[in-house]
Image (cartoon, rainbow, N blue to C red; front, side):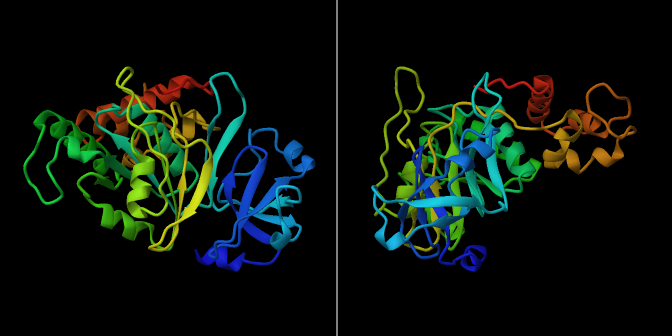
Length: 334
């Protein structure tokens, strides 16, 4: 939040909501949203992204916020350099990218073991992007109540699902990520999550139906974000969040809610650099005989040896190989 305070000048503000052609800005850490639009030239200057501005961007604007209305919005002139961002390939056939958010202190990638079932390739693509763009990430294994009892109970309701959850947590903990089990129903780790969000700009993301909005509501019930039940016909989530939007939370800090994501295409990654964004591979790849090493066919590959010894998850390694096979193309990790 300190960086935002330094930017808190009369002609600079942070984007707190993006609804397509219109934006809401605020002078964080004060919460005073006002409307703004984008100059046409700014739209034309950025042809690689579907959206030239993302929630979390610090922008310079013209106009008087106190008199801004839908008929007389401020005008965004320039986007300041981003500290970090989250970006994905926008669609299967598009060559454009989609900016999800910028200048984020931490992302909470939210997944569930069941309803919807976690997709490891989706998780791995998201994590690779966070590593590449310097976004700290914590994995939330949500809806733990489906296999655990209440917050203080040691009894398991479903041992098979609990074993799947433990296996998932071990894979990503061994890779170097923090994995936190959460449950809105039982209150599991909600207070811990509230502390992690305090005085920071954080983002909740994940596939539809994993309970992002419910978690945010648990952090601050006054927000009352829209939620929906899982579709039993297709066992997947329904989109309840339609816009990218930042909210202040009463315990301090700001949280960004995002629409559910079905696929996550990588942007601008070469085969030679991809392994740099797998922390567990980074720990051993200096031992490879060849440099660079793609960790596929080369003899004396320290990464492949680590996979064989069980030090690197074969599932993570399979995700890495699948990303290599994309070769600059994009396929959704459904």
